[in-house]
Length: 252
Image 1 (cartoon, rainbow, N blue to C red):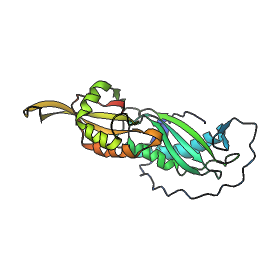
Image 2 (cartoon, rainbow, N blue to C red; image 1 turned 60 degrees about the horizontal axis):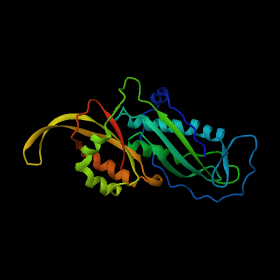
Image 3 (cartoon, rainbow, N blue to C red; image 1 turned 60 degrees about the vertical axis):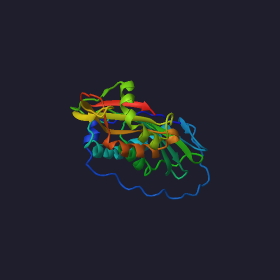
Image 4 (spheres, one colour; image 1 turned 30 degrees about the vertical axis):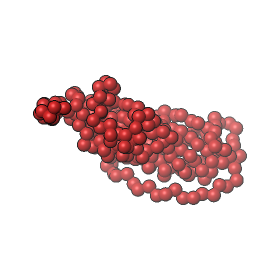
């Protein structure tokens, strides 16, 4: 499988208009035609029964996928300008060149909706016809924060896990308990002082920080648990004092 890294430039991000992600139609059923002859003069990316050259995969991603992904960035950076990370997508490509399945293999972006936008737009891609039948390829890319935006800092995973303790029932409901196989990236910020009840029922003043957004990836590309967790976390306030925005990745 091909693993080709590509950094999206800030100039590209700024060139796209704030358009919402499109509705993705169901993939059309395809009948597999006879295998084609495979050229011998290029590096091949061998998948199921066929293959695509590295230049064929790069050409499709750079000319079709990256402009579409920039629309995703432009739309979701309006709410969370601090988003950055890297991502790996896996594509099952039919012998016609159309994409039959897209799987998010890895992501450190930490925003479920942005990740879903990447996956959704990838379903519209069409690669050159693979040589020898359907194939499977992967593609990696990464981005940095926009100029002028302070990069989120990392945080203590131990403190963060302790702060998540009150929300374990919701996490278990969404992800299925400990060792679920999900890797989740959180952004934490908007710290404020609030009066809350302690274990003795007395009001005490604590510094709380809000979960700004989250995302990640599950076992075998599963996304259902993340959607549940993303919705549940919108009201979470954790007992942590955060300066600016913190980014923490946990295996849950």
